[in-house]
Amino acid sequence: MMQSPESASRRIVIAGGGIAGLTLAVALKQALGESFRIIVADPALAGPARADSRAYAVAAAARNMLEALGVWRLAEAASTPMTEMVITDSRTSDLVRPVFLSFDGEIEPGQPFAHMVENGALMAALLQISRANGVELRAEGVRSGTVEDDGAVAVSFADGENLDCALLVAADGARSKLREQAGIGWVGWPYPQSGIVATIGHERPHDGRAVEHFLPSGPFAILPLPDGGKLGHRSSIVWTEATENVPALLDDSDLLPEVERRFGLELGEITMESRPGAYPLSFGVARRFVGDRLALLGDAAHVIHPIAGQGLNLGLKDVAALAEVIVDAARLGLDVGSSDVLEDYEKGRRFDTVAMGIVTDGLNRLFSNDSTPLRLARDLGLGLVERMPGLKRFFIREAAGLGGSTPRLLKGEML
Ligand SMILES: Cc1cc2nc3c(=O)[nH]c(=O)nc-3n(C[C@H](O)[C@H](O)[C@H](O)COP(=O)(O)OP(=O)(O)OC[C@H]3O[C@@H](n4cnc5c(N)ncnc54)[C@H](O)[C@@H]3O)c2cc1C
View (tube, helix red, strand yellow):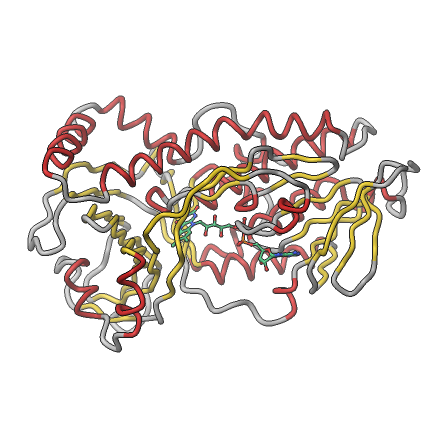
């Protein structure tokens, strides 16, 4: 294949303009410049950004990357550092929720292990940088990718146009059509739980404290957001509830008393600042992260329980790993869609992903129940961790995404 941006070998199509797809596009475009065309296609790019009350706990490593790419400074005003993390284990009706485990939120002095950031602000920042850097945004879906005899992959868009390229990245979410078309299997199961997400206003400041109450139906997380709203202070809740209870809860015009029962009294009076949204929860990992000139990215490759707020962080680690192998190959003049390059990506990501999936699935099984023996065992376990500073430091570095081998972007280095 010829080496000009007009040749297929210098084109990469990313199907899916969620946070994972757009971050990859920005990382590739900034590193490869005019020598490559980077195209992101997503029907959701057609309208205004979807109203979504979701906010993410972005781990320190992922934030290093967003900072290096110039995205973070645009989203920073919609973010707040997590300075402390507190875990309790109680029943919904308990008035007092004793603290079993608490983490100081800093990995190093002045470096929080995570920041909360609002989805809308992060998406807006990514779109702005994508446009400024020359990423091509197409407001339509990708129908298929077919590998041709000459080695290129023919990407077919919803408007009927075809474009040959070196690599197709499927960042098209948990129900990835491209993964299915490539015949890549999926190992997973649904949880009988949904995640209710909403923004809550409150009277007293949260001081950057994140709280997770482990209740019998699942974890109820209170995550700090920047100040604002009707009562001056805001938090995001991620409320895991049995799916069968969710329609009645959301139909109820007055959800607030139910939120209050779980939220507790510590932050004073509370109010709903957004309409709640509900997301069915599941676990799943693709059997392979790569196919013929195809790489799976983000939720298209794995979906995990939000109990540890790590789903998007896993996707952003995929971005750092995939961007690094592509850019290194391109600089050596190698084929960026070759199986060698894609296998390096898969090797770098598979273990970490499966490990995080197993941990989050196990935590959810251990905590989302009201069995007395299990309650005693887990409270004993939490109490032991609380008394072991070395173990706590290990957990906080893992939650910050700084454990194990780290691609350059996650250290804040440019490619
Ligand atoms: C309740 C809840 C709370 C969570 N909290 C956290 C948290 O605190 N921290 C964290 O790290 N993670 C969290 N997560 C996980 C996180 O939301 C996801 O991991 C993340 O949004 C996935 O991003 P993505 O870009 O991979 O996929 P998506 O955001 O699903 O984007 C996929 C995109 O692909 C597009 N698309 C679909 N089909 C096609 C096609 N054929 N062609 C082109 N485009 C297509 C879609 O329109 C969509 O825009 C949470 C999840 C839930 C459910």
